[in-house]
Image (cartoon, rainbow, N blue to C red):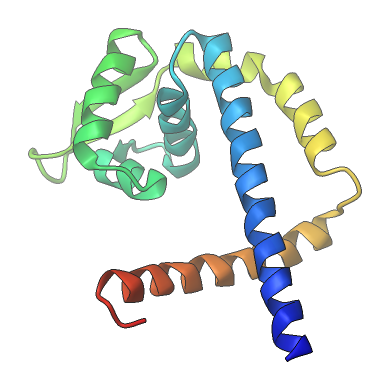
Length: 160
């Protein structure tokens, strides 16, 4: 009985820590977005494209999947970001039904201009953790993310 209570308490503490981290990251993303004169979701789209792009552009569906949002939302927001000169959207050479999205030089310059502040912020956020600790943590969080997706699916179909 005591072990179950301790596990329940540890799980609850973990979940509340994640809620707090999510809330703080949301505020940080809002701050970066404000510095660029865009919305937080638009900032996240830029960051997803920056991470996913291998110098060929990124399909909107890949951005939507990374951010766990509807592809239509990405389409709508990337049009706005293109109007601001932060994105380039070109027809995919492999399939004319799809666009390949890339950051423009304007976006790359703006993001680069924030790099010193972002590095300082990362040093603050991850103070006391070395690379090996972060790798260990990321592996464990990856397992939890995968398992939580499975748990969510089970709950939605009434298996639990």
